[in-house]
Image 1 (cartoon, one colour):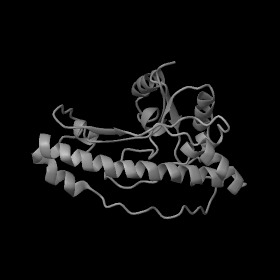
Image 2 (image 1 turned 180 degrees about the vertical axis):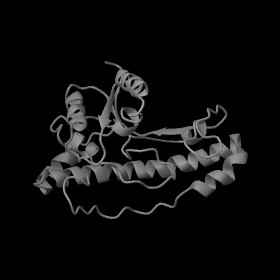
Image 3 (image 1 turned 60 degrees about the vertical axis):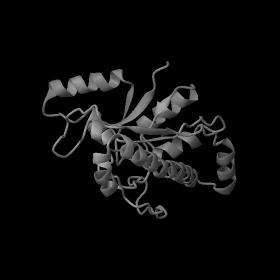
Length: 213
């Protein structure tokens, strides 16, 4: 019970080697043992993995989420997937406590691209910022008064959490830069070249529901 559940892409964690059954079997065992919930991108916010995660939260269990839903290879400002908003809304009135965190530097430890792709490195700094625990009960109550449609409530929660993490990302980038100057000055120029200027996200627009959520 002290080990978290975690949301993971079904394509990566469970279906990556469909042409090699033994690899698929091993991956399935590995990620299932690690309490990974297979999320299928493109099937909407109402899917089995989100349903299961909501049930875990109702039992006061820990669910870890990567709200961008993918490895952010190019340091873009990616929109958060809306499952996180549904997990908050559908647990009302017992809204789960959220612990926001942001990290940077993992792409140097086990690069998913470049000349050192898939090679472990142990001499690169990693910077992690953990925010204060968030109680969104009052915020959700306001949303339920403001919006009658659950989808509008889900969007509002998702965008609210996205804004919080975005601010933390700007903070962790500054801290990481200072640490690089001290620990790995040879990486400073490369790091600065990868930074993407922040632009406030545009309002969400949906043409086809629910498949684009």
